[in-house]
Image 1: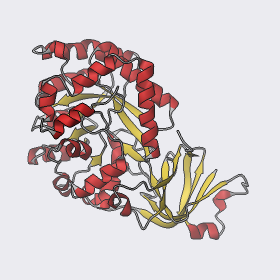
Image 2 (image 1 turned 90 degrees about the vertical axis):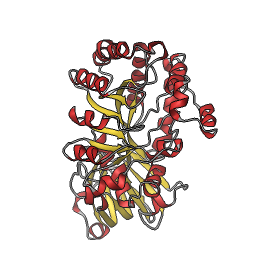
Image 3 (image 1 turned 90 degrees about the horizontal axis):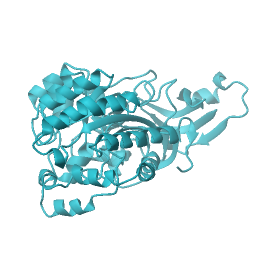
Image 4 (image 1 turned 180 degrees about the vertical axis):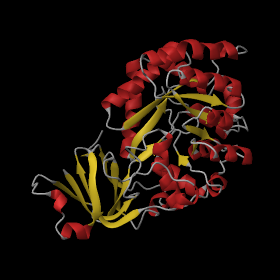
Amino acid sequence: MLLIENIKKLVQAPGASLTRVAGAEMAVLPVVDNAWLLIKDGLIEDFGRMQELEGGYSGLGSNTGIEHIDTGGGLVFPSFCDSHTHLVYAGSREIEYIDKIKGLSYEEIARRGGGILNSAKLLQKTSEDELYRQSLERVKEIIMMGTGAVEIKSGYGLTPQDEIKMLRVIRRLKESTPVTIRASFLGAHALPAEYKGRRREYVDLVVEKMIPMVADEDLADYIDVFCDRGFFSVEDTERILEAGSKYGLRGKIHANELDFSGGIQAGVKFDALSVDHLEFTGEEEIETLLASRTMPALLPGAAFFLGMRYPPARKMIDAGLPVALASDYNPGSSPSGNMKLIMSLGCIKLRMLPEEVINAVTINGAYAMGVEKTAGSIAKGKKANLFITREIPGYEFVPYAYGSNLIDKVILNGEVIKGV
């Protein structure tokens, strides 16, 4: 058993299991002041105010083998839930970063063979073991920055064998690291150069060969499509989502990053768990989302890195929608898995309140990757995936101090992570 004591604020502690929060509720953050938290067998056993311990809390029984942590005025948060990443990739794309500085757009770089296709070339030349080694370092990095649950996509393979290679790497990461991982198959990430002018044939390949191969090895939890201008159409998207659903793969799709693509409507039509990016979201899209179970997941790191427009988070929340925030960790448009920075961008660029961004990176992020029953909030019976901050004034300080590392300890599955 592990007892954490003298917690200045126990953040996101509703006392009962949340699944998500929406609209005005996103500005409400349940907090226990001057708190303690008890962990047993990797799960949250109980929590409350320090007065209860001082009064002789009976839940400890006569157990003398309890490990104690005194936070010294730190705060305790549930681990970040990063619901959209591409962190399994080979190499990097800093040369394209220079092209962006010189004024080339994301689409211009893609049209001349860069972007996703560049990453695909590198990945196809990289062995599974080397790809695992590179990706493991990134997982270790995000763990120490407070992430306890992460979704990872394929999509840089773009051939049957290389998509399978990526998903096998994700499975190895699931098995070898303490973080909770969900995998998404993203065979329709971009059109390979050899299929130029033959998009339907490539969609045939995804539907008829790749999806059955992925399902045969049980390699993915979800299926994804890049439904946007210059990538895959609504017709393509619906065909792929329908094929995936036959194998139990629910949608989590890229939508409306570059234009009003119809991707949001397609995702909702097929009951996608989330639709992600959403820079181009209007009244019609908001109304569609309000009538659904689909989580809007916003990726401000990509808009920041690419110098593009930001999604209308304020308009969406004010209309009553829930919002999740994710990092989009990838080599081309958001080369960072720092969820604390994503919170800061949420406040600075999306005009979200500190309470709203905390909800967006915890419980709503958990919902957007299907782990809300075990992660995303402080509740009895949930996984003890937490981080303890250094002594700080309050939870508002976390997105405010956008360049500071405020984490003192990371706890995953009830164990203090000494270094990964």
